[in-house]
Image 1 (cartoon, rainbow, N blue to C red):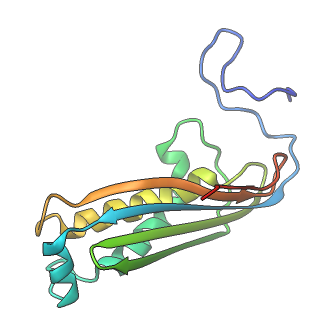
Image 2: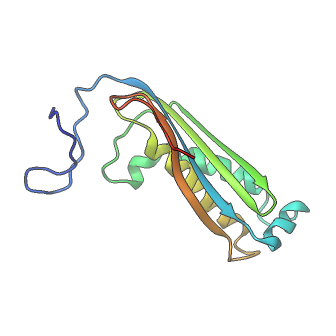
Length: 158
């Protein structure tokens, strides 16, 4: 295994980095996404009459399922054991803040799994309410923290 980090081979072509020789370590990552609902969707959620059902429950399950599918979506992502995936959704008026945490004991990190979980949960919210108002917006998708692995811990500054 090479000592330098690269996703390009000697010809400049994209490749999957070889992590075969790395020792598995415990790693966690947390990501966030924000969904702006608007007043029409917020009102329908308040009275419990969203035609497709429980928006937050569907989004939570969609995010967890997505965390386990990252290598199917991102061509250079490694297949890892996602040993923990938690997606929390907090609604405050016309905003839903989604926080996704993923954990593994593997050779590479779970940052992409956490980001994917948060993003897909946000997409599921949009899918659940797009018939009510197509102006719903996703924003603020970002990695909040990661721990473990060679690079250690990192936390986004506020």
